[in-house]
Length: 116
Image (cartoon, rainbow, N blue to C red):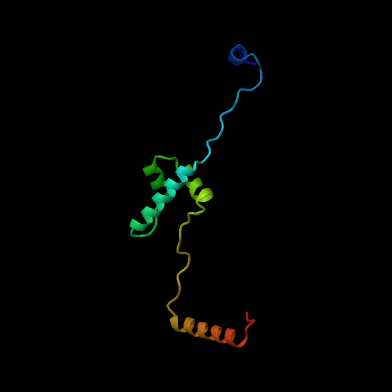
């Protein structure tokens, strides 16, 4: 054990008169007020926004809350899950084939109720 750690342990013993661990800091619980505030701001932003969306980082900046807390409020309390839509695959320009397939599919469903 180094000298600094020993001095720290002696100081802790003189302060608390026991060698056990000190109480640890507890996590702050998410308050209902902050959850309601975040939900109201999200609804307000979406109604005003041209794209009907907002980002958690922008909300955290405007509300002066940590980004992780805003994200946790959105996910756990309000039950909104942020996601980002990505274009993965483009459709070919063959609408006639797709329309023909859809009509055939609907006809089979009409004839065979249990198909597919």
